[in-house]
Length: 232
Image 1 (cartoon, rainbow, N blue to C red):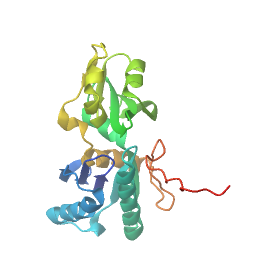
Image 2: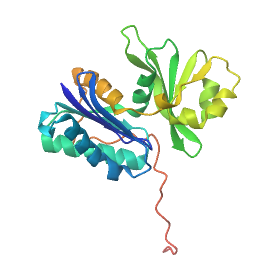
Image 3: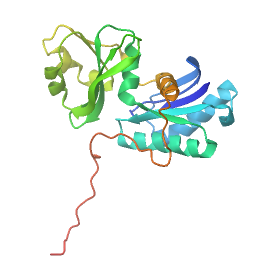
Image 4: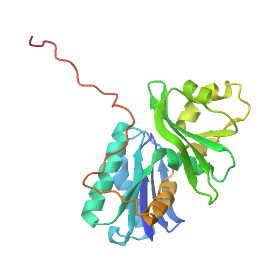
């Protein structure tokens, strides 16, 4: 199975091509450019490097959130467009699960944190089950890092750009069993998205491109301005 996977849910962007679980090509882009300028050229470059065409792809996958509102709209719209145009099956993957998968294998609980702005992070916790698959503990939510740290106990490893941003708060919690992963493991990799997507495909967890929408977890930061004058 050939898989095209990509992520635009965070400040970085990533594109990968996989054959089953083998990575054929992967790029992580952290240039600060808008994802709308990056994504399609990066997909074209991936196809060229591996000498594939879109007709060769068996499965499409991208992160569906939580994450950057603009980034998610770009990624999910691209997924929908490719799925409609090619009639290929498509899968949506949690951004938090993709981050957590960077840490496997581990006996610790994994707390994935993505920077949500406004002093908050998007977060969810995971453990490896007996089969070695990630299993979510509780739900995904947006919260203050202090609140998450207060609620979290035991041997925990934190990952994601939210963990990097609030590392001092985590380290200053006084909880000696808390660890933060190294820099490279905090970025969402499209290859991880593709590997998770393959398992979801096996379980027939496909999206319907006509109704698929990103997972935002909270309202957008942008608000329409109030009119200067209102009619009574």
